[in-house]
Length: 314
Image (cartoon, rainbow, N blue to C red; front, side, top):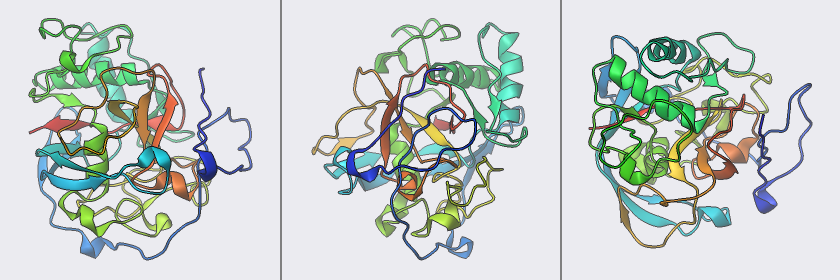
C-alpha cells in the first residue's frame, strides 16, 4: 500500500506509534476550549434521504466566507469565497452504505469497486476506509444511477461515457457540475460546511466548537479506533465528524491559494495529489482544525484513516 507521511512544517510533532500500524498522516498542536453545544444547532434542513442508499443529506445555504487561516503557510492567504447552495451528507459514508452501492455497481458495469474497510477495527456502521479517490468517483456514479440520478463524473468532456472503471485523472471539464447525482465536495464546499455555512463568522477552530474533544474523535480520545458517526456533537448545521474520526477526500487537486475572491472554485486544473481534510482518530488536535489541508496523497491511495462524505449540487 502506498503511504505518504505528511508533515506541515513547524506544526508537526512526533507521536508514539500505534502497534502494528503502517506510517500515517501525523499533524498536531495544542487544543483550545469552549464547546459548541447541540442546543445551539440551527433547525436543520434535510435535502433528502435516498430510500435505496439511506444517505442523509443536509441542505447548505450558499454564501460568502473567508477561507483559510494564518496558522500555516499553505492555509494562506485568507481569501473570500462565494458558494451556491449545495447539499452534503450529515455523516461520513459508512461501510454498510459503501457495500450496498458497491454490490449494485459490480452488477452494473462498475467492475473494480473494492470492498473497502470497516473503519480501522470497527463494524459496518463505522465510516468506510481504504477507498481511493478514484474508487469514490466511480462509487458516487454507481450510487447516483442506483437512485435514478444523473451521474456527475465522465470519461470525457462530452458527458457521453460515465466513469465506471480504471484510474482516470478526471479533468474539471469531465464533471457535470449541474447534475443531481452524488459527488465529492470541493475543498471550498468542505471548509464552508465545516465552518457552519452561513455561520462561518463564528470562526470556530474545529467544526462547531473551540473544544476539539466535544466534536472530534482524535488521537487523545479515540482509543485508537474509528467510531460510529454522530457520537460527538454536531456543528451549527447539524453535520457530524467534519473534525476527526477519518480524513475526508475532496474533489480538488492540491494547490496554493490565491488572494483573489472566487465563486464556486473547483481547484487547480492539474496536480499530483488530491486534498484531504478534517483529521482522523489518529490525529492530534491541530490536524482537526477546519482550515487544515493536506497535500499528502495521490488519488490511488487507500488507507485506514481516509474515507469521505458525499455532496450534491442543488
